Image (tube, rainbow, N blue to C red):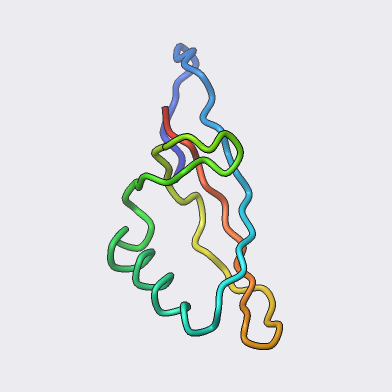
Length: 85
C-alpha cells in the first residue's frame, strides 16, 4: 500500500502515473514473472525510464497489472505506478 504519513509530515507528494501498455501475448509470461517473481508480487521498487520526462526514476506498483483487452495477438494491460523521491 501507500507509504504512511502523519499530519506533521509535509514531504512532497509522490507522483502517480496511470499506465496502459500493449504487449504481444507471447510476452505475458515475462510481465507476470517480473511482477510476481522479480518484484515479489509488486512489493519491491524498480528503476524505469519516466514516460514523460524520459529520465531514470525509481517506481513501485500501486496495483497489479490487469489484462483489460485482447486484440489479435496483443494484450492491453493497465496499472498504476508511484514515482518515488
